Image (tube, rainbow, N blue to C red):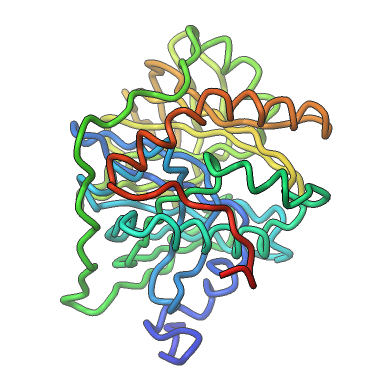
Length: 339
């Protein structure tokens, strides 16, 4: 059923998907490379401040996905992970839309992230003194990506057993322009990728339970959807998808695997880029080229703290460089009531 525009749903998005859009803890965010290949990273979704956009953030010190979205605003969001949402029968929702990248007010971006991330993921920083959190500007300083939905598809569950229901934005729907790109050279990767995709895959295929495939759809947007079964092969993966999955043609593709606990205190993600080489009904042959570097933090509190500190040592020096490229001051980590 198409939603009726209201204060809580001004764009009239489908009623069936509203709870998922507001309560999901993880979303797959897909962008396009210069060559038109999809790259998908699990991240945390938020409703836009006026409930007209679906927003994600990325750290200023690792801006690659935001810069891809600024260069090519055609993006996709896949809401297919019900863990932590509190929803018993959550549909799977694919959103294709236009991205607007916001990084002209880094202090405002940081204030927003501190406020709403702690509201949505309170266990992630529970027990941490504010004095410690104030020292994590390298993490809390954010770029926001606001996605204006153009197309939505949704299925009853990850099995994709039936054809999806659909919604399209009114003709002429457009997104605001992104903030101007910063001057200077974009930084290189913040972490080295694994030397062997297969070594990563052997562990991740079994241990990380949620697998999603991204391709480039005929309309030019990324298209991301769940994989029902994954089997490791010598060259990559044999993937089985549901009967109602989007039609796939051979071409560039991205496979993500992830997991996180019900109370979000840690996460593990793996991303493989390559291509779909063959399609036989619901069976796809994915040829892996490489595994991307990932941001995964798991284990007990001591291991999590050590991992976070290690990432801070790598990413901290990049903060002043990225702030300088935008001719702004290094933001302060502030909490509600302090500004």
